[in-house]
Image 1 (cartoon, one colour):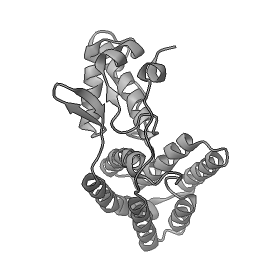
Image 2 (cartoon, one colour):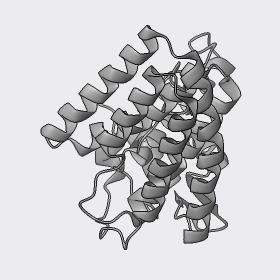
Image 3 (cartoon, one colour):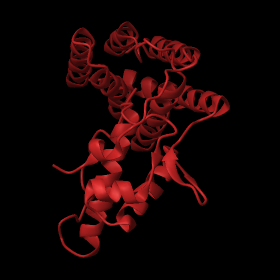
Image 4 (cartoon, rainbow, N blue to C red):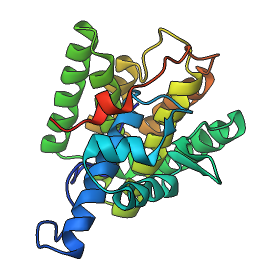
Length: 247
C-alpha cells in the first residue's frame, strides 16, 4: 500500500513559496528530499530499518546536511523514520503492537470516510475510482508491484477525498503510509497489498450509495490486511546514493 500525504499534492511537490529565494528555496530543498524519501519508503524501495546517514544523503541529493536533517525530522514526525540518539536516522521498524494500533485506527477513520463517500459519490468520482482499479489491474498483469502498491493506497485516498472531509482524508494518508511500512516489514512474501476484488466491491457499494455495505466491506478489507502479517521478506542492503543521486 503505498501512498502519498495528499491526493491534491504529491509528496515530491515543492511547498508553496518555493523558488522565491532565501527561506522558500531552502524549504523547497527539504520538501524535495522529504518527498523522494517518503515515496521510496511507501513503495517499498527503502525497507524498514535501512540506515539513513545524513552525509550519504547529502551527497546523493546535492544538498547540505542541514536540509537533509530537516527532511528527516519531517519524516520522523510522520512516524516513517526513527531518529536514534548518537546513531543517526533509519527507516522506522514498527512493532507488532504498533501495527495493530495503526490498522485499528484505520478502521475507525475509514469507516467514516467510506460512509460519507457513499452518500456523496457522483458519477465523476466513481469514474476516478474505476480508472484507479483498471490501472491497478494493469500493474498486476505486468508484474509492477511498486505501481500496484501506489495505486492501492491511492484508492483509499480517493475514497476519503470523495467524502469531502479534508481532516479525515489527511488522517487516511498518514495511516496508509504507515500501513505500507508495516506491510513491507511483516507482510507474507509473495502476497499483493489490497486485493483488487475488495476494491471493486467497495466501488460497487459506493455506486449504489449503500452506506452500511460500504462500511462493512471496508472493515472486512482492513481486517484482511491486518491478518496478512507474516515473517516478511529478507532485506537486501540498499545503495542510497544509487537510489537518490541526482542525474
